Image 1 (tube, rainbow, N blue to C red):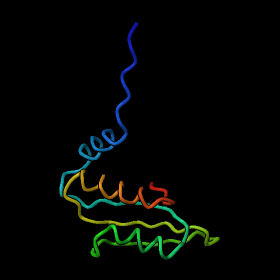
Image 2 (cartoon, rainbow, N blue to C red):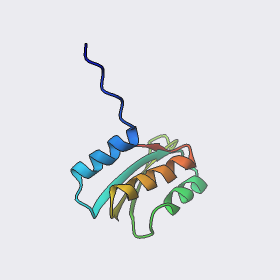
Image 3 (cartoon, one colour):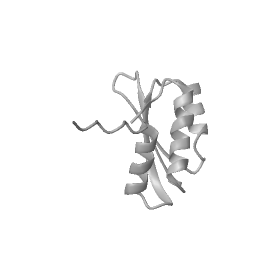
Length: 95
């Protein structure tokens, strides 16, 4: 009987997928949702360079804000580094 394939690390899967669909350098779009806390938003935006294009969209109830950022990145490693730094903030759902 065949053995199931070992589970690949999610970060490695994402790195492989990024390298499949992007030619680096490339413009990459990040999408995140969080509560509209201005300190948290400022901390989030500080992770990205000032030239990144930022779009904020508040939910109808005002309980959440979605932030879309577009920036030129040089590699999948740069994308993964940004995701890791955002993850460490806590309270941010990355799409």
